[in-house]
Length: 131
Length: 374
View 1 (cartoon, each protein chain N blue to C red):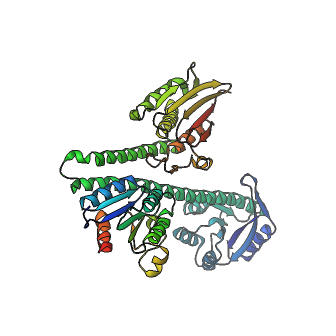
View 2 (view 1 turned 90 degrees about the vertical axis):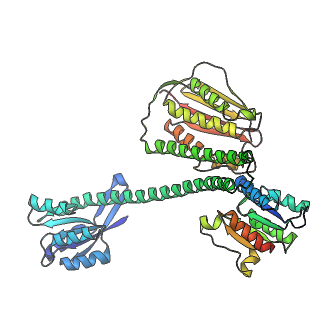
View 3 (view 1 turned 60 degrees about the horizontal axis):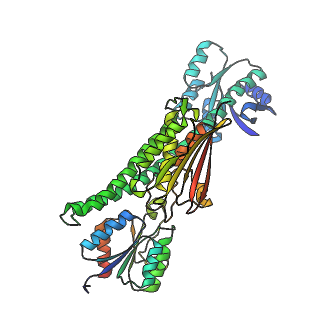
């Protein structure tokens, strides 16, 4: 494996979003590890599969699957960046973000992106965090 | 007991006093609406004062003298109509001419009361007015509730269309940007998925149309003698084409004709929904067993599958609109979430019942019973 190539873990229960994002990241030269839900992602963590950044959907098996997974991801590697993707804020009017240190203390993610997200937007955040 | 607030606007103190006296301790009963009212009377001696009290006290009924010094009764009436005040107006007039009454009711008064009037005449007018008010307000409340439900439904529909739209758009953008290269065959999977999501949208749209037709009651029902066995056979043939690659076998239990009185279109919808669910939520190589039978005073339809089944908790939510049982096993199954809601509504039209028996990983059996005859 090329040492320059970065690996992205993508966790989402939306097959289409997974297909599209994985294909695009692969086309852009990333290694991709895909997990169709929190349970699958926990397996990836347990197996010790290496990756450089994680993109996690909030609502999967449970409405808060993403939050729980973020905690586990940060516990496993506090310095490894995590992007939390959610459609929740727009639909329920529930407002939260990961913009300040205070917010990042309980939302264990480096960035939060609201669905629907454009690939370019995701790519920008991935590049920035891998900086 | 509720209170009906009455405002009397009349420049004659004698009339105001008479009304106050007549309504003191009087209870109006509306037995068919299950309501009782006591009266609370307030007075004004001019149109101007009446307008002030209207705004401040928000009475339910206004007893308004036709002839007032200064601002006339009709002026007050016009103002009430113009400002859309929710008050029921009864004109009091000394000239019991048809003209006055007509001109007042044309301009928004509910009724009129001719001077001189007896306490019973007053009560009779208020009885009519009170009843109208109650019915009118209940209707408004119902309309507001309907509006709320409609908005909620629309917002769910919008959301249900948003997700496949985003998926299809994503696949199209992959093709536009040649993400998988120049070779067309590389895009077989994206095209296939886009078609699946489009089909889901198509199904949602046709289910919405079915649901609207059933609920609006606009579709003319054609109830006639049919054979449930024939329709069940057709549904099984349709169901077999749903997923030939999954090796699911469908069968109809042997037996004679099962006559019933029904709209064949509605029975087809029930059958197709139940059979397609039994296929969709089955395991590969599974079975769908359909049975129809006539029993004393009832016709029974049973659709049993050897599929993924449900937990008792999932079963309780099954018939709601846009309810889809979400778990690892159902994640890849497309559906509008309206099928069983449609089935339930149709079965209700026949005063029928639906029973569901289910065991996770073993299968689910739907039993629909239509009462017949009698």
